[in-house]
Image (cartoon, one colour):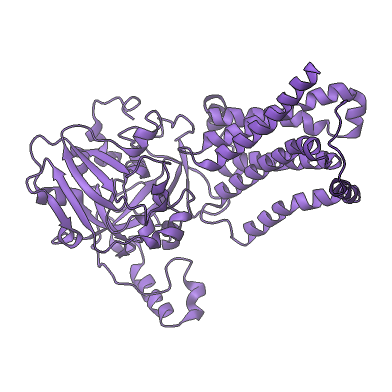
Length: 312
Length: 211
């Protein structure tokens, strides 16, 4: 298991130039080359985000675009892993505004373009560990959440950051049911939100975020279980008190507020000691789950002195 | 069983007449079709991005479906007079086969014989405990599903033993409800159907006892 995290060169990470070129060839009708594409990328050239490489990227091999955009938990669009890819096309992501309020100096409704203005987009290749004990490696594109918080000005009394997903039942059909308490909500402690690993992502594989992955703006907190990384965000609120979180409300014993990846604290109904990496095929070996999903060097200090079996 | 069957009807007689001519092997053959289809999906990469989970869930659900089908045979006969009794053994063995496949996929492909985790799971996880108990209840039924066992045990003892399937069905449905996140409708529907089929039997037994 490779858990080294930093100082790898871009060229070690993804043969990006290779697949870009290959994509262009495919797009221009070089169907004969399809067999060489390794099942990796979509067969058309989209607008590139030109994200910069990051020292926070893992050297592990990313999952394919098809896997990342075809196997999703996004209950607003259905309960099966394939449902979001089938149904998310109905989502309108332009125009898009994010309400930023609570204990901030400059509250207001910010247009997405305004939020992205001046932010340096980076490619962050992160491990992604679902609470259901499967995992992926995803080349996200985004910027650090702390950069946005700095722009809006966090007031001294703020201790938490609350997030809310869009509520639009006409486009998100499951919101007409009560399978979860809509809109989807999540939250972080302020120091977690300020950590450089926590990003707001706008894309993956250097392209705009697929809708089923939480377009146009989603959180990615790689040391926590995937459901903490809330999708399609329309509201960010700085609060003094711990905010509500959807799965935590649904089953507090099963989904803690922190929900840090922790192989030693089992979900009450299943073990978290190991995981299956998506894409390994039928006989892929299970792999041990790492504390903080392998990001312990960076984030363990956030939880110094806490009993993580109680504050799970 | 002194209960009178519902009064005749040409439709029922025709149905039973047709069913009598259906060979039992055909039920086995049809029941094996989903397995063959899954085999095709395995080799043709048709099970999606997480083929192990998909296969595990599909054979598990098939097992539950065959259990429900087996439980429905007696109510169907009592309510409509249509008898599928000849096929019940086949349906039961097919159910056992799919449940055994489900357990095997979990053991070998999913948890991959990580015995420390398996042991803890069986003891600590209600859904796995319940699933395992359900499977354990099916084993003696499969073993005594042949004519020889029926003759040796005698009809009464055999029937009493085979009431274990009521427990297995409930265990299977509860196992399904417990394994999912939140409360999606599908597992609850299975639990409702199983509970309904068992409730019918309770009602008939009470009425029988009173009469």
